[in-house]
Length: 344
Image 1 (tube, rainbow, N blue to C red):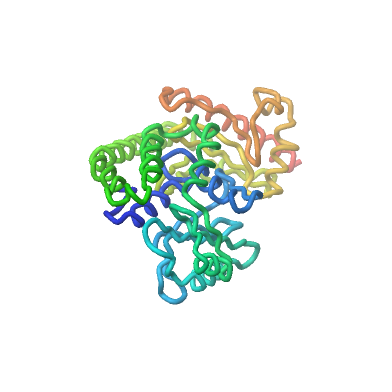
Image 2 (cartoon, one colour; image 1 turned 90 degrees about the vertical axis):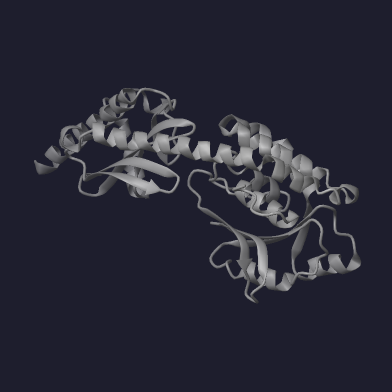
């Protein structure tokens, strides 16, 4: 099973956590699990799903060649997680702590966690946590926070992955000392592995079909015909994302771009600047020209990008092409006017 790995409880659980802790994975729950965990420790924790990068490592090699179950790196945090379900806390927490702190240059904040089935209560464990700046979080508290927060994440999520995660939660909750011996959790993994693999394969096939639409759109919109003044028309490629990009230079210094992409939640066409100066120019100059946008500027959703249009995934490609070429025409006309004025 792709998100589980192999039959050892702690390893299996850590693999599942790695999958759901990464907001960019296909579960669609974004930062639900990440924020639910870290806000138990730091109430100020925030993660920008749209613009912040994150890496989640499994079995990360430490300074002393040990293995840390999970290492999470965001722009502002370095988080080490030791996952404890069955075993005693015999790990070298000092080594883990120093490994996490080694990533805390600039403004990163270190957080070290022992995630356990039951609260650690022995005097030895408590002292070990305290000396090495580790915090004990139980699965019970994590799941309680997830259940409290999940409502606002459901609209964009993948229902199949929610169902599997719910089963995972139930399986962990059933792991009392008595039921541990019954291997309930691994039985669940084993019995559902084929269905989950089929689901994963089908979802990958679906994502690939969406990516093909970007290539089709690129073929439909000829740069020479619809964007002759653009610096470049190209496709930005990531393993899980394709974006049709049009880059412009306005007044010889403002870098203005249009991104068109499709995901499981639909199409989106965005107008944005490549730097702060260009973003300020778009919002405070370009968009304030009366005929530049078809609707009043205040009616558009925006953060550091202006969302020009959104469409459902199944809308005909001609509708996307029409909307994109409309925006291209507006940018082309604006650039032509400003270039002519500069020549005078």
